[in-house]
Length: 407
Image (cartoon, rainbow, N blue to C red; front, top):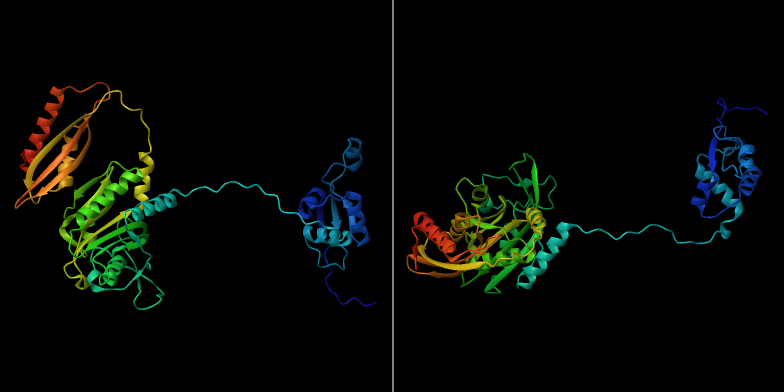
């Protein structure tokens, strides 16, 4: 015989654990049968020197469940524990293996709070009569939507020349939905939830926000207050009670972000607990919609979720009754309801529990507004004298700040 193999094949020694074999194959074979199969196949079995000697284990009433296996030199295919197990079960007989379903621990899946809130918002808006739409996340570089204060996120490999950018707002596709349906309907109310993307802001990179967009359009009716009412009722139903509609200042990011599609001076920012939730306003009419009345609102679902979770606090009902008083005022036509509401609430943070606008009437140069104010103390019943004092204080503030006339 002539050996032309210049390098000697190293020994392959594998640790074999009987318990591991049982868990892997699913049958309980005696260790003597396992060793006998391996010896018949030419494997060399040696004691694992790292374990206590077998005689001591036998005297203790135990058996050795781990040993070393040296593969035959000709079996170069044996490399792992699983290869050795396969050799044993091959002699045992595949046909003798019983089919068994896997046994695993199952736990109920958790709920993603944001998905639950998003689904709840959809059900509520559909209940209001709005239609949900699904649009692409891509938009074209239409010049009427260009704005110097933020930059579109451009795709490196767009699907077509018309979809080169990621949408920075849900407005761009919602207004197209309104344009394409305007010839079939006199009123259009749609909403969409989805991601929006834009550069700039607090982060120098790309911002990605899960957003809710609502668009209400009518050929003959004003839609701004309808849209505002939808948002108020939506917040009420999802459990968000502490929010404000505030005027947008010239230096506000909302002004810069929306100046290309919202009318100046006819938009409000939605705030709660010092955080900006979104905005609503009247849209600069595209050519295809002529003189349509169009209102649009967009809100950050992630910010709403934080506040809704915080709102889930429970307090015992007050033992003392609340007192309601109405105040009717005449203000200029340019006065903002949200600003007046905020001024009333800030007049006395201790006793004023709630402020709501319950009536509104437009005149030539004036607006007649009626607010319902709820007073309540936590430790006692407020007297008429105290309520009258608070009402006089509120009236004085409104006269000074808005030149309001009481009716």
